[in-house]
Amino acid sequence: MGARDHLLVVVDPTAESQPAVDRAIWLAQALNLEIELFICDYDPALLTEQGLDVEAVKQAKERLLNRAYRKLRELASRISARGVDVTVDVRWHHPLDEGLICKAAESRPALVLKDTHYHSLLKRSIFSNTDWDLIRGCPVPLLLVKPKSISDQPKIMAAVDPLHAHDKPAHLDRAILSVANEIARQIGASLHVFHAFDPAPAIVGAANLLMTPLSTPVRVATEALETRHRNALNELVEEFPVDAGAIHFHQGVPQELLVQLVEKLSVDLVVMGAVSRSALQRLFVGSTAERVLDKLPCDVLVIKFGENVEHFVRGLCSTTELVS
Image (cartoon, rainbow, N blue to C red):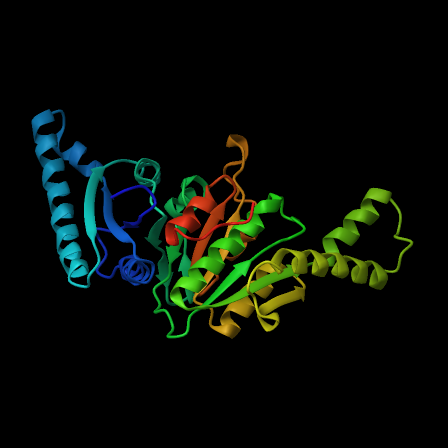
């Protein structure tokens, strides 16, 4: 199995259902990719129970990892029966996110898939610390899988910010669209593009900067800002095969409008970017992603600046050539 020709699927050894595995099978069949099932396990109780008996600790770890390995082999057998090539790997590592990031950096898959936990009372997912740490640190695109089925006619939404109001690098939006477009093409999904602008922060910020009320009426300033955003969005999407009716441009709070639109259209996958921060700021994702991931009722594919997205897309289709 070579780099970027497979999907790395994080398996929860304590869970009965494995939505990420189901999604990986669907994607592997559609995109002609292999699957690697991965369990990263750790039980601190073993160290406490066995005390300083090094051999006893070693044997307890081996029993734990053997159980995980058997679970993966059972899953792999069912996956192989569906015509997908699959391998397995089990490791002892703590904390979990570091083990997953190390594995992804080593095997360089096209994509890492992981379940999110779902809270039925809240009707939304609950992202764990591991999820957030993976969003920040995973060296390849990360697909966070929600426990719902993909529709017969899938919809993919690329969430972009062409004027980079949230500090995204300019070419990250193009990468988001490239990935969303290629996946949509390969699985026969319809491609949608979302962008919303909120004029209030810009107008209030300008007034504060000038230390005086704006001389330009708010309506005129808002219309000028809307024109800038609309033109930037049109320029961004012009090289992609997006139907005019599938370009969703709105005024308002982007985080709220995206969730509403995804629910209204029954979108299956949102592709969005997250900005990597410095070590000092690493606790903040710093983009729309941070505010909507828990609330979106569908899978979310997170792409960060710095990932080799061109290789990712070419891994899906070797004949695809991205415009420089």
